Length: 197
Image (cartoon, one colour):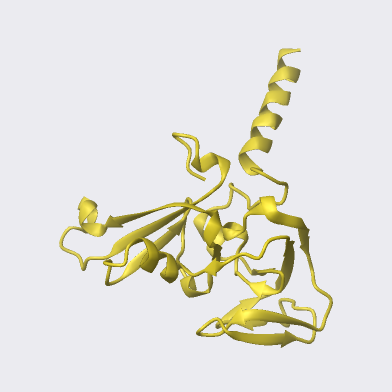
């Protein structure tokens, strides 16, 4: 009986840790390498946001779908104003290359509201306009190790942003200065003390 109850509590706890507001929310159990090595590109209403980490799933009408070819991916290119047409379903042998990164799969979420998508650079300028020089970005618990320019986050989904100068970290003493910009999204775990999503 005790083992049965423990099993129920374990499953309940796991469900609450990995799914905040809606099933399909990005997985909390990925490592930084897995998160940054993801080969599935993400769109919202056809707009490329790269990852699901910046999506407010409370406003998603239904979970992702693979769009039927041909389809258009908006919001790509150096300035985020370009579009590309995908003629064939992407795969490992036939990836879709967006901003220099190959994607073996593309999914699209349908969102009810019209979100204002912001880049990590936009967030830095909005919250810390005086920060200059190199930055290392984090979103929730994940370090963004590559292609940081392609990430888009729903501006209204940002809970708070912190800037940590490298001078605060003893290990970087004597190194070229940089700033860690950490974005916390509005998920349940970021409201609870002692837990960072």
